[in-house]
Length: 160
Image (tube, rainbow, N blue to C red; front, top):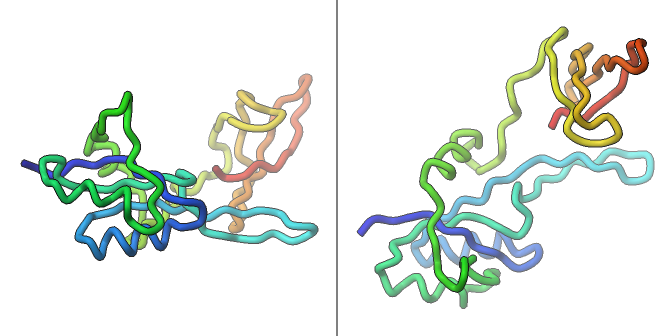
């Protein structure tokens, strides 16, 4: 048979350990990572975290009896099942996600926006507002112009 992608849930903060142990057992894993900027007190802190917290992808042949040892692997919580059945993920989804990542699994930034580009705000108090890009900072912040009560207001939004 052929290998398919499945979803695996790992234990809290054990993603590196789970990947290492699964790879040593011969399984192919994919853990997409994302750079997160958070604010702590008056400082910004950059960290790399899993794109899907507590979840990663694993590829194996379901007809092989070897996959049963996955749930007992150090760092792994369980294979995700649907109605108690193990179901695979379409390969195209994982392949397209892999194309958006570098060799270490880190999500690459989208192409930079240019001044004058239109964008839709998806989070915060201005959700669903259409804004015009004013500037794009190197530290993943975008300044946009939003039409508020017939006036243009300049606001800052995260690039994601």
